[in-house]
Length: 341
Image (tube, rainbow, N blue to C red; front, side, top):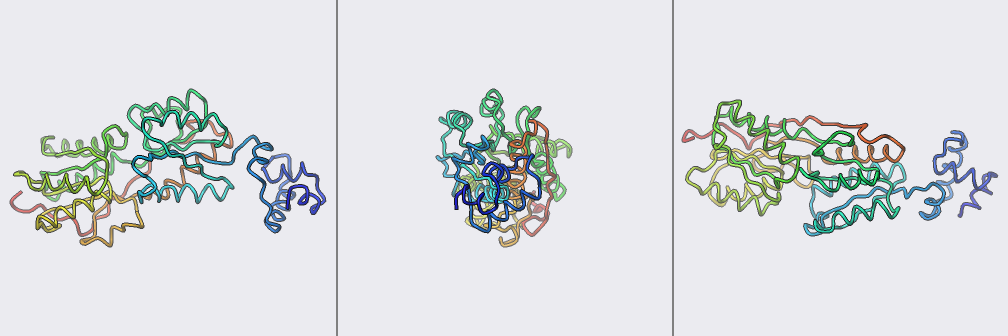
């Protein structure tokens, strides 16, 4: 059924039906409900081209991912996208996922902002110096950020309390008697990595411990990278008695290294991982069950989509700035430091 046929069925003008479907305020709520119910009953869906002409909107959110790392195979990114998709679909918005590389990223964002295929861009993993934010701000194109921007003023964003999470986790390990702690963090050009690093350092300072007792490593957070890093640290003369993991995938690599070296978790080595409530790797199903800092990446995806849709509706940039608290969940992978420590 096309628009003309739907309008004839309802005995309304095509203009009224189009405006009702596209949310124009001059159409009464009663008429809108009648039109939407009929559209659902007859399976009517306006073509993207027609909808764009009628509203000047693409009804799509833009997301860019790093094709070099194959982010679509990353369970964390997929879970995040699921949250975005779930919310956007309820409002009749699609997601345009654009692959790019670090070299071409600015070109990709510029194209999305200029060619009319999306109404708003969701920017992820903000960096300490972020040309993407500078570009979109200069173009005055609507965007929201998942993560803390380097200069938050005038930017709508949502983040978790990475600083507080890793300060709390590090303090917890110190209270258990651990002094030699390794932190396997992400790449040091991301804002969340800096926040986590500062949180751990503040915990050491508050306990009166020298900073060099915190052995920190920066890298892409994969299980393989973590395995290599953990093997090197655990085979050293001053091996750590606890390892803080930047993600659940990092914890997988650390557990493998510990098992290869015959170390018992938590008797010989305590492990704390950032959880993100990943259904693919439930912390409760590890052996032993993992102590984690918990936050829901899916819920964050849903919330950032809500913020993006609000920007499309005319909300001013910087109107929303949320930092969610992170809970420490103590399970079986942590214990008092061994006596030799």
